[in-house]
Structure formats: C-alpha cells, structure tokens
Length: 135
Image (cartoon, rainbow, N blue to C red; front, side, top):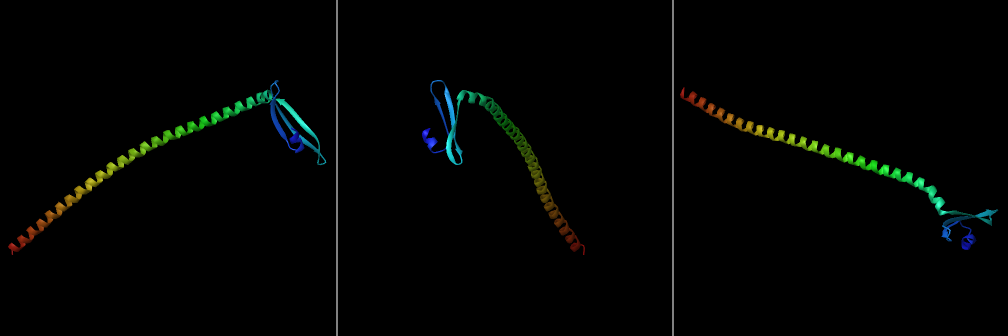
C-alpha cells in the first residue's frame, strides 16, 4: 500500500482479517499537481457480490436464451436443408429416368430408320431391275 502511495497510482486489493473478505480501492488526490491525499474505500465483498448476483443472473438468462435460440434456428435450418436435399435427389432421379427413356426411344428410332433405309434401298433395286427387264 505504501509503495502504491509513493508511486501515485490507483490501487485495489482484497484481504480478510477474520471479519470477512474486504475489497479496498484507493486513488491519489492531486491538488495543483501535487499529491496531497489518498481517497480510500473499503467494502465487504459480500455486499458487492450480492448486488452483482441479480445482474449476473439476468445476463446468464440472456446468454441461455441466445444460445437456445441459435441452436433452435440451426436445427430448423438443418431440417429444411435435409428435406430440400431429398427433394432435389428425387427430382434428379425422375429427370434421369426421363433421360434414359428418351435415349432408349432415340436408339429405337435410329434402328428403325436404318431398317427403313435398308428396305427403301431394296425397293429401289427391285424397281431398277423391273425397269431393266421391262425394256
């Protein structure tokens, strides 16, 4: 304490002389730039803590509400993301089936068009032969 007074600084300490823990705070009082006095305040720690209890309780309640709300929002968002993912997967399956069906039909049409071309070529050859023999 004496060292703090000599250094002209504010100082705070806790101690217990058997009557309960005390908190002491002191600050230098300068008059015209010269150290003249020290202001010192001692308070029982129990008094200070009892006043803080209500404030701490309300802050804890706020924190729990904030965390609870955040977790609830994250849970709801996760639920909707999973639901959306399932919907997208279902749509991909449906579009894939439609694509495979379209490819199957295209292949059938290509094969049938090749068959029609081959048939028309045979008919053309037959007509040419008839024209030659009919001459």
